[in-house]
Length: 178
Image (cartoon, rainbow, N blue to C red; front, top):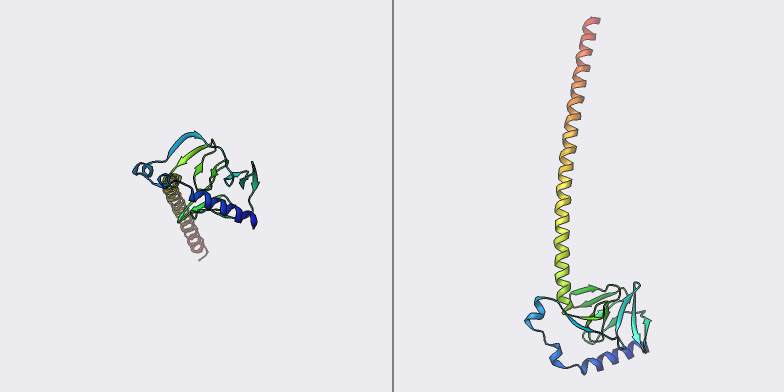
């Protein structure tokens, strides 16, 4: 509990010291995710996802996190690697980091500007791919059902022919007996 309180206090102090100008979003930011080319060095309170576990950077080393963490801006990072802010959720990938102020760092150490928008685009792309896959699957099912229907029809016709032949033979046999 003391660890979480210390992290929360650190995050609050760090956020309070943050320059307001850094928090402003421009129209360009919302159009496309951008990467800043400087390599990031981890700082106390940063979180990372590695080997399917969440770690926090403390005193120069990564320590396993056992409870979800809420940053000062309301962003929640779960022990399952989900980063939630409002109605948006991002799943951290191997080696990705989140700073104490909610900035995303990719696995190469580069800051990712506007990661929330990039996620929205990624989700949209994924939804399009799922839709395409569903349409293709629907067509395959439709074709399969049509082919199955044709085979059932052919089988029914052959069965009807055999039944007719059997009835005809039974009639002939009956006439011979009478």
